[in-house]
Image 1 (cartoon, rainbow, N blue to C red):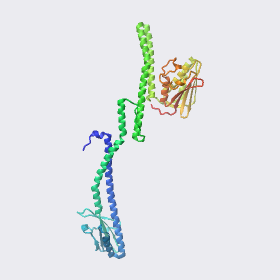
Image 2: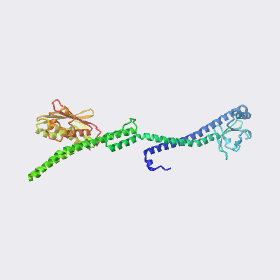
Image 3: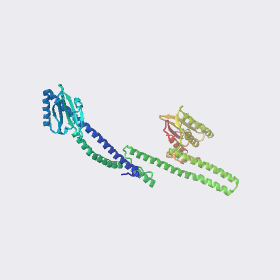
Image 4: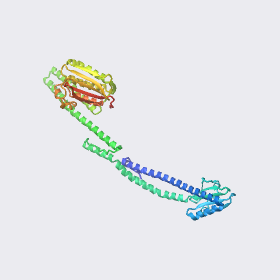
Length: 467
């Protein structure tokens, strides 16, 4: 019978075949072990019986000589009956003094020279043509040179072995059949989670509902781990799809304004029809295009960072020195607004991170502080460490953040009531949050005692950053 290749590729069929094959191999192995055990067990029993008879007849000879041995043998035959045995007693010159030989055993060569060399603990096996069983014999030499030989047949042993060999194949067939049934049942039960997984995937493909999840049995086995990881994968996919939709919605919404302005300036220049208006319109087009490109680039960076897809060039860097460079860069802008930037940091703040992205984080925070703080104010920037983390605080004398807005200031395009008059894309703090989390850190905002906003970035010293 030939099994189709497609059926073999089915994991349900393969598991069933594996279980069936395992049952077959196990039953054959058990067959061999039991057969060997039968041979060994019956052989030991035969040798024990021979040793017992030999000891009994040796004791009889010590008590009454040859006559006592023969009398003991006759008594054993009458008393025990049943299993026949062999006994020969030869004198010192080899003459036969007495014998008990069952009629069916006369064809065995009892004069074999090997038999005359036997001593207690040594055994010889005699075979005869046409007889399916053998004789197992042992012997001893008495003090006067007489030789005693005793033996038993292996007929009973071989009869049981033949019965075993005749009927055990049926047992093997039953075991294989049982293994096949167990394989079908167990493979079906084992593959139920896989079947559920396939059904759930089909539903998601048909309906597009990424919120669907498989129920985990909580057994802790491989299938439970698979279901758990599948659910985590769906969480990740749902997050990515949701982020992509939000990003596309945001891009579509935010690009509408600059594109409308572009069209308006172009139409106005075309209506007026002079070179000066053309040049002015082209300048506006370039400015609005740059703004749209910057907007698109910022949105894509935020989306990649939030989804764990942003590439980071991780190196060892000094956080204090890096933040100090940012502060020095913004001192020129602060001087124009009659502001001052005060910076303090611990001596050594070594961490693993992307220096360019870290400068982007703290540059955005200092830029916000300069943008919203009043003229003549002071901006404080502190760096320190606490436990396994480093922290950076940027504190200004600006209007602060209203309590109702603290949970929203990190949303894309969100602009609070106090910042609507300022220019910007509304993406700075969203970028800061996304980049901080990409480094394994976090950001929070509170209002300092002097009413200004205090933005605190926490970064782990040894983050497990995906690059």
